[in-house]
Structure formats: structure tokens, C-alpha cells
Image (tube, rainbow, N blue to C red):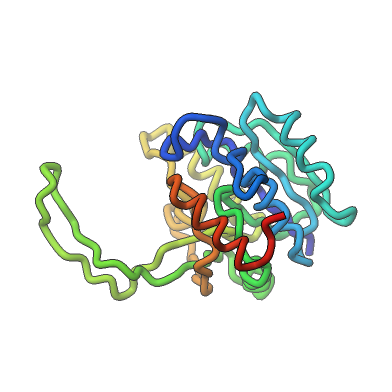
Length: 237
């Protein structure tokens, strides 16, 4: 089987504050995207990386990643779309025919461990059509109304925080995106992850254990947390 990773890297990242697109923000002196791709290609099962980059940064992204990938791993950079879902679809549309297993990864989860990547791929190769890494929800969760008044405390038993990379059989993921494209005509909005597209069309999604180090860089404090993790790894470069 051939495994391809589509990296969603076109988002602006407004919650990080003004500046370059989120995937190009620096952590310990390197862009998040470079860190993420380096983590992905360290996984022996990964054969190809397709990056959906900010449309005005395609050439720059291709150049910055040129020396990151080992010779065994191919690289394609495409212009991302207006939404994450559109960006991923653009990546899927340029996949070569020999790809069987597809991972979809957020560039903002730059420190994902190799063992997590391999466990997702292994689950797909073992027959699961859609696989997501996840960690149990640890915080107390409240539901509130539009005025900010709490209406309920949600039982967190059985609740999971989902991470990436998410893994899929190529056939299932393409079908899910095609179904989503048709549903958008009927007014259904985009989902926040690709597993949600599979769920929407009635498919089964399997959980595998996630990792605390696969957190998403969303706020400025997350950049500090990422540097702390890299320092502990001895990987500040």
C-alpha cells in the first residue's frame, strides 16, 4: 500500500494574532509547517506529502520544504481553498492513482509523534475505513444559552478530543468529500474534520489512542507550550 498525507496549511490563524498565516508562524525558530512535515516524514509508512498552502505562498512553501523530505518521500504543494474542507479536497484531487491510504493532518499539530502516525496507518491497513486519534475529555463541560447562562453540565464519559492525522481508505475519503460537495448544494455547511464527512454519510469511524503532544497550536500560549515540548525532546535546533 502507498500512503499519502494531505497537510492542511492554508488557514490564517486569527487567534494567534496578526502576522503571517498560522502554518508559517515560527516555533523555536522554524515554521510550524516545517516542524509538522518533518514529523510526518519521519514515519516509515509515509510515501508522499501534499501540502495545501496559502495561495500566495505556494512557491515559498515548496522552497522551504525542499530540504526537509528524505529522498524516499515525494512532495506536492497546491494552493489551499477558502475553507479547510476545500483545501483538503484540492490535495486529494492531485493524488496519484497508486495511493491506497490517505492521512489528513493539520499543520498546526506540528509535534505529532511518529508512533501516533504509524498507529493510524496500521489501523487503516488492518481494515478500518476511517481512523481518528483522540484523547479523553479531561475538563468539565458546560452547555450554555446565547446569554451565557449555563443550561446543563455535560456528562464527559464517552467524550473525546479528536486529533490528527486522521486516516482513511482512499475510496472512502473520496466518497465522503464527493458526498459533502453534493450536500453543500442543500445548505449543509462544512465540517471541522474529515471524519465528520464520513460520519455524515453514515460511515463508521474508529478511535485510536492519541497523544498529548499532538495538540493544536491555536493561541500564543500554545507556541510557548510547543517550545517547551521541543526543549524536553532536545529538538530546539
